[in-house]
Length: 47
Image 1: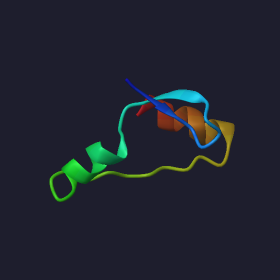
Image 2 (image 1 turned 90 degrees about the vertical axis):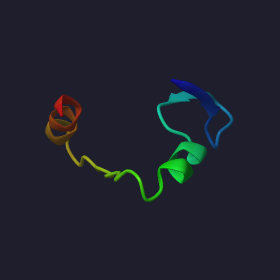
Image 3 (image 1 turned 120 degrees about the vertical axis):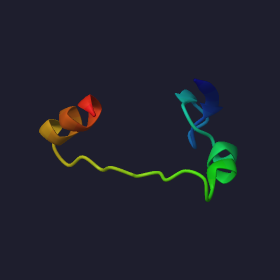
């Protein structure tokens, strides 16, 4: 995982950075998922 900082200047780990997304443009498709309930969040983690 890559170490980055959040907007609140707190350390965090991410699997992708903006540079990674720019490099993948046109080569890979990404999907954003928003879970509205705990059940949806748990189901998304299993995928």
